Image (cartoon, rainbow, N blue to C red; front, side, top):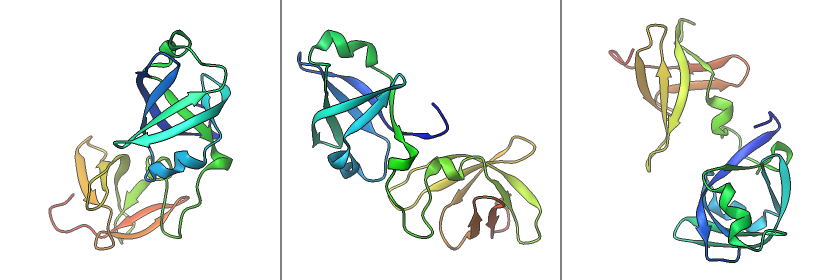
Length: 164
């Protein structure tokens, strides 16, 4: 993946014999695929000729890939878009790739750890933070625990006793 590209899905399988691919979306808004005109796959920008959403999966037909044998090699690969084509977020919202890797500090500016991943939960996301001893801590990504997020300086946390 190039730095100007964002992952938006993973190809799970083919669907039928006419080259349709079945995609697991990696986005907070599956409807994003309705307005998508292309994907990037293996560094190729490929036009989408048809799309449909069913059971939280996306089915894409790609221009020039009208046979199952042409899309079989794509199985298991990630699909991307250019960062310039990403959706606009509201203030205080972030893409996961922006948060992963940020350092986390307490109010006294003591380093608590680094965000390693974000676990999606039906109620709220959970930050997986690894400290300097490689111990993993889980912090709900909610106002009670997150004082501020600065994509340059890191995240200020308000941890409860025993969290770290």
